[in-house]
Figure 1 (cartoon, rainbow, N blue to C red):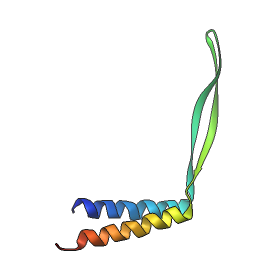
Figure 2 (figure 1 turned 90 degrees about the vertical axis):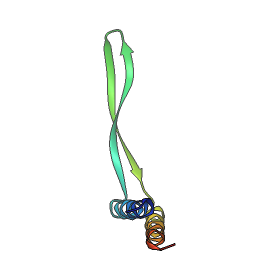
Figure 3 (figure 1 turned 120 degrees about the horizontal axis):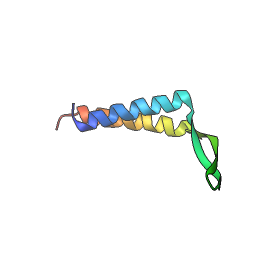
Figure 4 (figure 1 turned 135 degrees about the horizontal axis):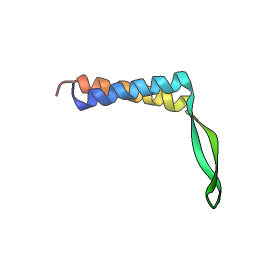
Length: 73
């Protein structure tokens, strides 16, 4: 498999995953206060939304790159 085919497949898979899940969330630790040896940390839940148009665009671009990877020169 050449590089164009691999990139095309990755774009298709990532676009499909973004389309089906709609986004992802993660937990981030932040330090709120530091008083001598005591440290107060807070866990914040962050979420990232992936727009559907971006997922569809990645799938279309992945398909184009994949087809171009199979073309013979």
